[in-house]
Length: 408
Image (cartoon, rainbow, N blue to C red; front, side, top):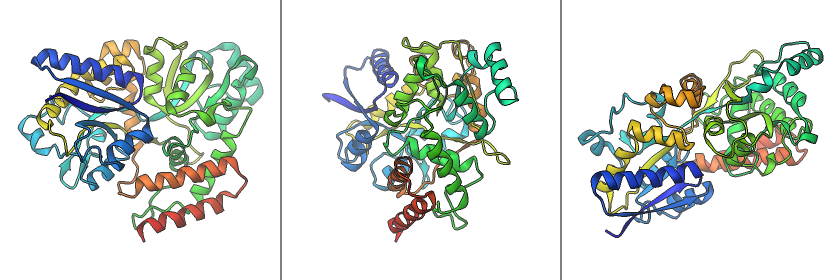
């Protein structure tokens, strides 16, 4: 056995964690196998593992697959069902060690196709030092007539973003991730839809975005991200990682992003905002309630791997409480309840215990093999909305027609 190959989601904390875990694993069990860790951007990772059948043909032994893709991966018979391995030799405290919301998306057709790797639902990330500053509070109240607090409604979100927008200081009201990679803008659209009481599914449980809540969501979002008096000007080129880095470098008052980018502010060397950050639930439309999005990363084993036993032994090692904590200290987000409540972690990242609160309101995306194609269509729709003046009604209607073609 010359080496084991791992397809890693490209992100410094993931890369450093995986290498450290492999080294510790080999040391503990006296294993002399090299691991080739290959970091890949989102699109490339999907293409390498699923489209080009890398997991199926044995090119990859282990891969990071997110829950958006797992149904598709199972449908294409690309990933190993871990059920029998888990029943013979379960990971430590499985399943009680994890919140239920991190266990069900990989359970498909009576099989279990991955173990939780990295988590952290979407949330509002904000600069608590600015929100708590007496001068800022006074000026805000004079201007808007109410107290400066993390926004509860989208209207407040816009007002607060405009209030803090100071381009002359290279400081902006908020940051979005608007790079069209089939993910961030899709998630933002879903959050806008859900916080207006809308749904991606109709009464027949089919994907149907042609409804009034979708039109309101797209209308609001396209105006917001084009608001030069509120939004970081580089948002259109930012993926979630770049948006997270810009926030950590002190370039904005608020961001809507994954919880992981809040915790990153406390642990990475480049952060200029350590101790100045907090998180809250997302704003919502008046008369509706907050929502979050739960998409998480899994460790999966390729169906074509010739090293399945070794790969599973590593997955068990990589998901212990100690390994989960290591990931968190490197800048990722541990998935275990023990990490969420860990006193040392909460000393470093004072809002870590709030993960449970976010999971209580976290919704998930439809589990269907067409979802990866639907995300491309929604991504193109949001991009067109931002870059053109075609009406939201027309864009939504056209997109829904394309979605229906996927199942016809």
